[in-house]
Image 1 (cartoon, rainbow, N blue to C red):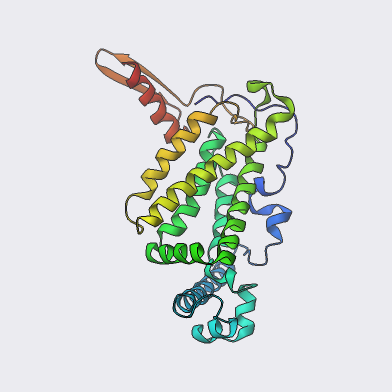
Image 2 (image 1 turned 90 degrees about the vertical axis):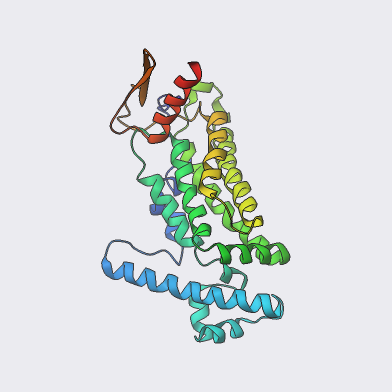
Length: 286
């Protein structure tokens, strides 16, 4: 996939979420943890354990009594904690069945921030959103039940939509920071392409996720996701350049044919996806 150099113009909106969890918008998240020390990691793990315990209690009560009939006091009591403990972790009962989104958003931002210098930004974004899929795939039964609840309760569905929008903003700002104006000569349309590309990645993820959930959480969801992302890369692969300082001008991989053998030569830092696509392209030609 083509990786043209980034325009010298300073990117718009790239100084917040596009740089990981250091941006002001994510830094204000009351659930964000500092990953620097062993103590903070333990505290983060304990917090997530309690959030999941409250979420499990909420889901059980929603399924048994119904969403409207369930109170925060009942959720707290079922989890064996006080009402004030519930509100230390969640702002409302509809938020309670999504215990992992804050931490997953931080992990996705971390993937963007630690991207290899020559990786195409679309590949980086696809890797980032895989953190979201892994969150669902880690507990298929819980994810399937949560999906059922969100289809039945408008308040839960709205909360889910709000969570998806946070990922989309993160990825849009990242792509804006790596847009190559020279490839398309579209000037003020660069935010549009970045938003459409980010939306395409999120939409591909959500399409695969919904299909997997409707099937009861069966099947190789990551393979399905890779197929969907291949379609996104083919559509938006040019115009979103690598754009990182020090990026090499040489391709990630070159492939040639010697008799009936393909010989591939790749940079040691080349993303595996780029190498595989170069090999697949060469095989199609032969």
